[in-house]
Image 1 (cartoon, protein in one colour):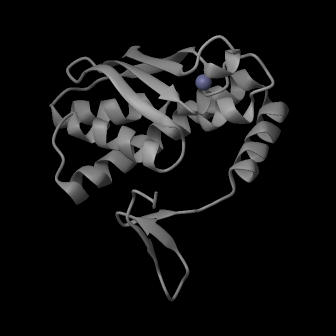
Image 2 (tube, helix red, strand yellow; image 1 turned 90 degrees about the vertical axis):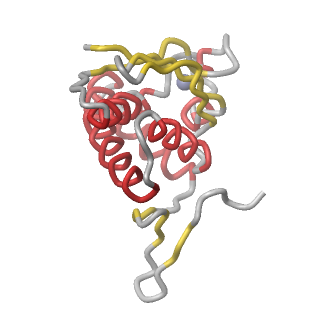
Length: 173
Ligand SMILES: [Zn+2]
């Protein structure tokens, strides 16, 4: 199967982009090795907290741009985001439930790059995703005229060795 996202490459600069947003294509092992090196230096708890803020902000901005680019309304933006993440190789994201009014949701992730990268260690590994769901759903909230403040947690992870997929849940802070 060919890529499911419209990748553009600028002939002059060599920059890659999808929907007008610059992208970097990197080997997964490079990305995971960087991730593990930072985790080892900071500790998973501290690293997770830093990633939450950075991921939340990036998801919010991405969703804002994509909503404009594609003319998406309300919770369509969140579904589009989950589809694009799935198409870009992070794993397969499936929305089991979402309430755009409260931001409460339950997302199933199979083939998470982090659970694959950490397969030998039985623990929850996919905390980089934590901020992404609240960031996107808070943006959906602004489209609906609401000021949501959300958090999220991975309630089960495929890397724990007991499940075939990961589960994230979002809720109000
Ligand atoms: Zn996981």
